[in-house]
Length: 391
Image (cartoon, rainbow, N blue to C red; front, side, top):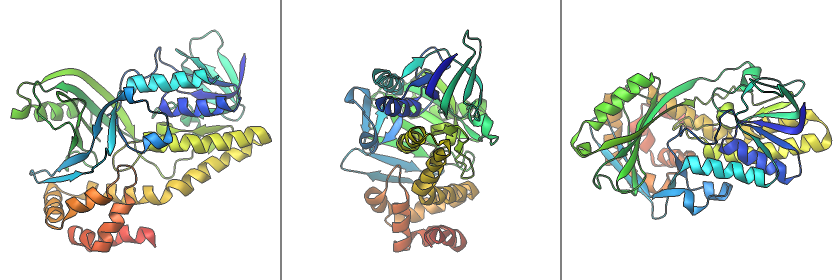
């Protein structure tokens, strides 16, 4: 039997970052990764907000492209154009970046065990049971579930996560079909609260993806139909990806007994976009403090502070985003088209360009409330629901 202070299940970017923090403090950390290699296959869009550089180490070699703005498309084709003078987001080589973060954790003293699939855990005793391995059980003072939406650790919390299906193609456009400084986002009631995106990787390659409450087959059908237009007449599909995005759940418990959850396993994602890397890195820092205090004090109940601190930090922003998500989900294409027209007529492009932020969307919503724009584009009852979030 192997013994650790901390076992991290999952060597994704958030789990590896947390493991690095704990190894730097001198704790004995084991990372159990079910795959033979870290980061593969790619299961995300790879677009992350600029704040990542303040939260983690991001060498330029992993930045494939810098994004300065976006074109937002309504169902009938009304387009809102928003932009910043400085990069708002980065397109990452997530496979290479995930490997880099795992290697950093190892460099600081964590032990990375590849091809170690966890069957189940006992969050009361700290026992971790492995599948098809000689050492079928290992133990830890603290178990950290950072193993994604289908977390074996989260299973022990008896609160399963709901998910959206996602599909994505890497496409060579053959020509400079898109401005590499801008992403494109397309909304439609058929896929709401999800959306379709075009993310430029380079001048000739883009990631085209979609997420929704649909099957992978239905999503690929939509993507194939989307590619059947003049802009993609010379395009070729280089790779196809699929994955799942957890649905943010405000009721989800993220600390229990000797265990905590991180990242997708904790449904730490933005309700509006499904992105979770920024929140995951912030949560890893909060978790590191709580776990360190619990182990140094030999008081495992101090792990509860992790969940409380996360709730304190994120509650207001996530409540607002959840309301926005619900409103979008209730809108028809006619509603969406009317909203886009009113936004364009009301000067929303300049407002979004000034106050918009990929990861913290409440400042923009507050500005729309102050200006009266939100009340003009949404029925009164829905506008009041959002404004009441700050009362």
